[in-house]
Image (cartoon, rainbow, N blue to C red; front, side, top):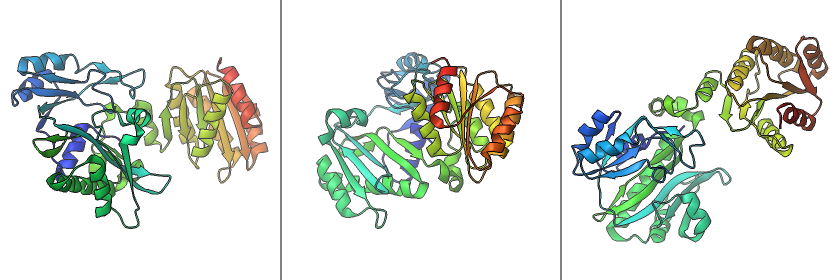
Length: 384
């Protein structure tokens, strides 16, 4: 789960990290009111996407009139960034921030390293730019410090980061407090990423000029305060609906919809669709209990995507038997009035009975005996 910059900064303030004076504005009238509090300000679009500056979502204003004019070019309009996708992101909120002197810019984050099952600090003296681009152009300027969860953040970790950023004395002490705060946010809130970019040096103090936080969806039930920060306007409506039925759904930009039970099977299905020249329209895992209700909800969600020209159902029946799943697919397909080609591959417990149910359903399923032929048939049926 992602939250907005202004929300991330509020959390950082609670943990003692310095941030600029800022006000949230939801309308042009509020922009005028909030901008009058500052002697010049920065207008910042609040969307769940990086690269806002390059997309025109961050602008300096010299006075209230200038702030209003620049806010009108952002609020209520779409921003198209590298991370927004071709549809862009609609700007519904603006952050009005005080102007602040910038003497140096750094990058600092604490994130989860899944491969090593620990946390890692990522730091660079080249802040203010996209860390992904820096990793390609100047990887030597990025320092990574692993934090084993067995004993957590220690002073020698902080020494290594301070050395990489060339911070000494009082600034090293400030960096130490910031790193402790970021580490504690990750641990306390089950964050998967806490990022400051840039962390600036201003009047001999370190200030979080921008902030980003992502949280583990699976841990939100323990953090109602974080869950309450979710902005439904920033989420795909199909993904929101999927959450209601405990479906794992991610929209993609292809035309072959996938309905699969199991995350690994879903990834394999998408890969083999691509191998045969197709493009998956989504990642959709119905989990281990593919009930009729779940399958019906899944079909409804898939069919909301106007780009979908075929649906590939790839089910491995283990605990859930193929005949039970097949009955669910038949009833769901009837309820949803599926008009695009529906390719079904079943394997596992009671697969023979499952195929008989599909054959006797009166619906025109395209059946396949293995994943490769199923993917090939889906790509052909989808017009690729």
